[in-house]
Length: 364
Ligand code: PLP
Image 1: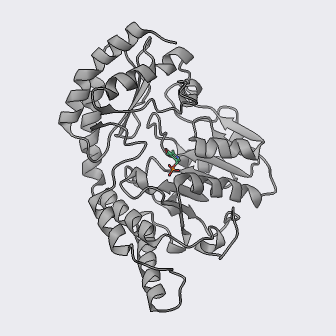
Image 2: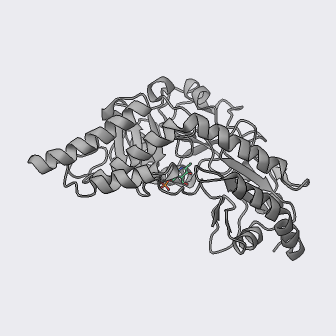
Image 3: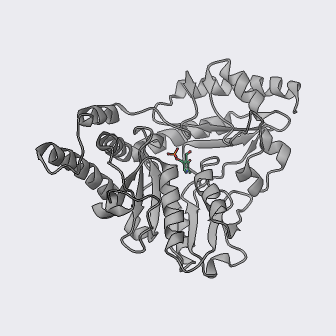
């Protein structure tokens, strides 16, 4: 399989599988007996590894079951403790933040520039809010967002969804000054179903569900020790190889961009993750492209969710001013640690033909 959907999930690293397996017999880390203490010690090590990578305190590391859960705890939990009701998010947040904000109501959206960067031309950030949320890097275009500027422009607690950025760019939680930051193991080679929320001591989000008081009471429930160990191992490898790997992938990304058919429209700006190429082929339907390429062994996505099999224009691309028809003819090509130059060369060769056939088939 020629896999170009690493932004959706990336294969589990051998180091993570090994760490997961080693810890898979661990029992309840809350047990006071020797076996419980052994599990606790594995969990503590994993927590310390995560804290060291993100320059924060181990107590600020909350293990969760996904990036989605981390985002939900942050937004709902910070909203619950605030005297204000307004939730400010960028227009290009992942659904884990976008839908959570809609659920909370009283949402104000920060617009994006044509290039896909969040900005605040109307001074929304100067007004009181319960919580502000802005992603570090966009999951569809890879555009790296000015999170530091956003944090500096508001007095509200800021949540950062760093799910796409972790393992690809350096992140220092204390220096950033965010109230919380979400990540997800399966995006950098850890197990699926393990997330982390970094949460400052104050303001600490209120819990979503109540129970045994694990993870500072912010996330009750017996912690998945093996999952945490797999997460920490994958993170360690991703960070140790980050500089070299991002350089290698940036060269492959340049190769893809240079090999695109001439009339394609690049939606990924220069200041973006080395792993993402978002490109539109006007007149071709994104779904047709995916099916045509799938039949040749390529796995890639449009980058936007489809409901009931109907291809919808991406909310992210529409927010950055791409017209509806162009947005529907979009592919997200996303690279990862297993991507090779040979795979990229094969994709570049296959793309123009697939685009030509999809254009002949026309748009629905
Ligand atoms: N936030 C962003 C930016 C993402 O890309 C994703 C996954 O695609 C999520 C949140 C949700 O993460 P998870 O799949 O772990 O729930």
